Amino acid sequence: MKGLLHFKCENVVRMSNSVNAYWLRVLDTERYGECDYGKHLLLKYPDAANRVQRRNYSIVGRPDEGLIEIAVKRQAGDGVSASIHQSLTRNSILIADEVSGALTSQSLLRYRRVLMVCGGVGVTLPVGLARGLAKLAEQGNQVPEVHLIVCVPQYDDLIYFTELLALQARYKWLSVATFVTRESVRPGISYLMSGRPDPCRLVNQITAPEAILLCGSGAFVADWERQLRCTFPGAMILNQHRSDTERVPSSPAASERTCKMLLAGSDRVLIGNRGDTLLETLEANGVAISNQCRMGVCGRCSVRLIEGEVESSSSIGLTSLELEKGYCLACCTRPSGEAVTLEL
Ligand code: FES
Image (cartoon, rainbow, N blue to C red; front, side, top):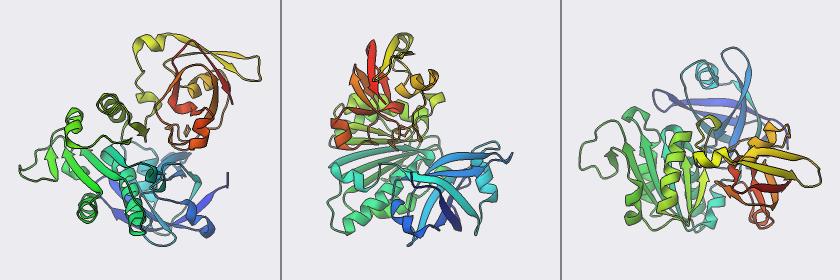
């Protein structure tokens, strides 16, 4: 934990009717290096009732030395995003608890083929990663082949569209397919389609990816994850978002069964159910562990599995050494047997 970061807003760019991009100058200049493409800021910002809230935003760009870019979609209601759209202007000062996350363009260099699927404003993370990969490619690095599928309900929701087309034209490792799901598109435009993409057809269109990044709402991510796990069973799934309220249990029967959780070095035995994450069971039993993003990215909630069977939907926040030692991410891991023993 390195403490708060301070930013000054230097530019506001209107990307669509509901999305603004903000260029933020990192005032703690020695920490600019931490703000890599794909990392996320835990921003502190007051909502309409002046209550300070914390929200994660991906770093989608580094437009100039010392600057980072985030994009914020204004959601309905009086929440933080509406407040940001209303009051974050040039010269505003703002604070982030920290910048964190293990999913960066650099971290993708370990793969040869990556499939990214995003819905709506979820495109910001793939754009950030593609921009970062472009820089790495220019520096002579071997970057993975990236196939990016962008889904938006309507034309007005398209953001970064022309930039993605330009990147695709320039770099042969990037291919982009954009789908407008609720409006029709004139036939014959190769890079823009109407309707929903069919995950099953992908197997005939691309070589099996080693990793799949899913970004968007919880329902979007859960739906694609379920289908792509069948289409590409060998691929590592890197989920960018899954909110607790939208979480889909692995199966109704599984969620009804309980699981004992033993904590190494303690006499406590916790009771949870197999549909809940380890983090949810720990918290429900009054055991606090460090966590931040709750989506498998920051790596804060890592715990070591000593005994028992689990299923993890993400391990992107872990190093390969931690994986070897049996660590898993408590926010993205569910027990699949009757008992687990964890070292916290
Ligand atoms: S990986 Fe961030 S809280 Fe679990």
